[in-house]
Length: 516
Image 1: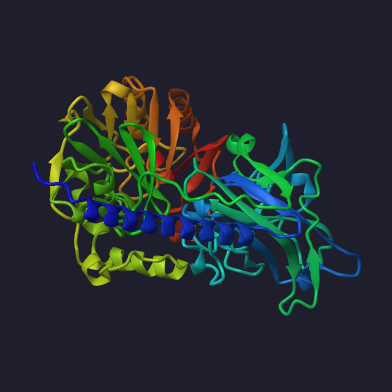
Image 2: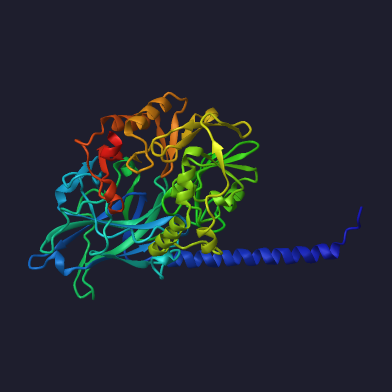
């Protein structure tokens, strides 16, 4: 046994306590700064939303004045530490007149389904300003517990999927309603923030109308009614700062990771797409690789150090482009050509340009040229029926052809959970050249419906869906026809003449060529 040096022990203990005390004092100072910075003598709104919803604000334009004299809406927002780290985005919609509001129990909401003018409530005023959790990209004044101002231009570039037939004319006056606010990139993640000083203004601010709130006795939101009960909107005079938490962090701060089940994680790409990590006792499996901008291996190492198998649900650019980051990736051979095309320098350069144009911050050290020329990666042929044994967890590959010829899902047998990428979701695209006929899509859905799953997840939402939801998808596909569909207004695909058929919140986007 070594002799005990009591003098060194005493000195080391004193040093350790001093260091620990300094850290506590620094933490207390930080908390004091945050607490004082968060509070404001004026009252404001504390808003909690689920992605897809925005609070509605009322502006009353007096007689003798008109909407045409105003060019923007300005608003001040504040986000605490916990929510600041989430995938924050800004949303701005407008609606007129008031009869488009519908009453849904405790909260008034606007119905904005795809379709003709008589179905649409809110109409997009300006593009989503940002899809990045890094709010300083949107406002240089943004920070944790810092009030920052955003402007929503009323004459900005509009989204092609919305109908503007009933947007206010320049001579409109009286009550106008606009929905604007913050949200997240995840449809299941709640997001809390604070808002004040919502105004309708002209360019130089000489004309200004302050919002009266929603103009309704009940809180008013524009968004998806499925989540309406989970939203809150209250007047407060102080802010309780919430420290950031999160067991899993992306070291590059690009992705958002959510633990869905003890064995299943969703990884959110800020360009609005998800991939999933399944962790067994011996191995892990990554399903899809999104756009491949952030480091997926880096994210996975934060969750598990087990060896990883990569499976691609199909070959599209937003699901297979990260395969180059791994030694190999399994993909149905029918989608090899598609994956190689969508990972070409042409497509990759377009991705970078699109992200740069939206203000998206790329990860530190990201090599743009390497990414553009990285290619599809080492693709291995995958066939339906293939089994991946992860140790205590069996993953079966399911043929789900339709959206593309080589689309596959994966079934976690022990947990009765199906992951299907884009093969079957609430807005399946069946009009692209690589899509099969709608009749073949229906045949696939009928076959998959017989499998042993209770819950399924898609590539553009990590919200769990049920067998009843799957039946809705089947019914929409069966009921769809050219006669009961309306044009799908997206200028990128106008040459393909897509149309959309919708029942409730489920739609099918197809074309006459795919119906034959």
